[in-house]
Structures are given as C-alpha cells and as structure tokens.
Image (cartoon, rainbow, N blue to C red; front, top):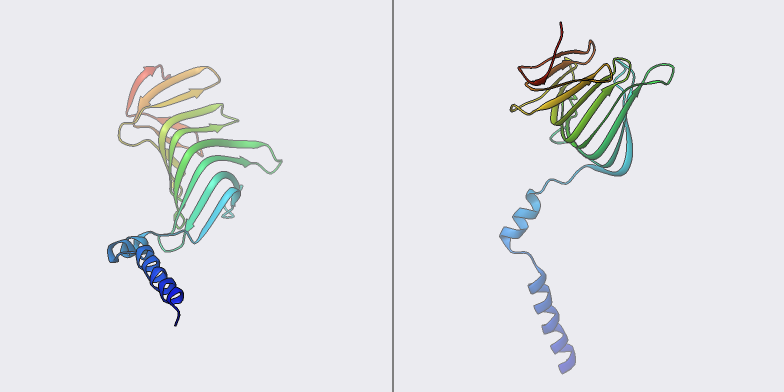
Length: 179
C-alpha cells in the first residue's frame, strides 16, 4: 500500500469522525417532528360538505398526521356562497388547526369579515371552535369590532356566534353597544 493511499485513508477517517453526530445531537434530531406534507404558496380548500367550502391561501402549510395538526403562515381565507359572492373573508399571520375537530388558533393581525352583516373583527389572536361555529378571544386579549360600516366597540372576552353574528363581550373598554 502506498504512503499516499494510507495518508488519504487516515484523513478521510478523521473527516468522517468530525462530521458524525454525538449521541445527544442524534437524539435531538430524531425528536424533531417533520411534517408529513409541506406546501409553499398553496391554496387549500376546506370542504366538509356541511356549508360552503372555505378557500385558504397560505405562504406555508405543514400537515402532521401523527398529531392531527396543521400549521400555516401568511394566511388569507374566503368563503363564497352558491352564486360565487364572498360571504366571509379574513387573514392571520399564522394558524394552528386540529385536523380532527377543525378547531383553530389564529394569531397575529387577525381579521375576519362577514360581508352581508358589515361585521369586521380585528384581534391579535382568536380561537375558532368549529363544532359550535364560535370565535372567542382568550387571556383578556383586546378585540375591536366594527359593524354597520362605522360603529366600533373595543373590549375583552369576545364571543361571536358566526352563524347568527351574535357578538358579546365580557368587558367593553370603548364604544357603545345598543340593544
């Protein structure tokens, strides 16, 4: 065996040893859950056959089968009626969705607008309870509601029944609510 060949083998073995992961690093890599499906600049249509489908456009969507979760960023969504008119639209910086219940946590510059009712909801975070069709704010987070085009109410403890547009606050901080 030539000296060059032997020297090359020794250098290659040092390189391989230097590039291998320690047991701690290897365990950490295995503990990171990778998505089963990742989509970039994607449109996802949520259609459970109960109502009109909701079209979701996101900068990134990651679906995790084991935990039944979806994570999405840079989200906009719309719902159209049978004639194609937009009845609901909104946006958020990110969302975490339970893929079994379809409950969702919307975060960062959340806006939801019901067109016909002229109802606009703005918050830093909202929780969607799919089965009840209810939006709620949590942790005494402030929410701003604009309705009938120019009437505004700011408060905490928001609860919105989206089907009926019934809005309640635990505490009104600013604005006037008429019966």
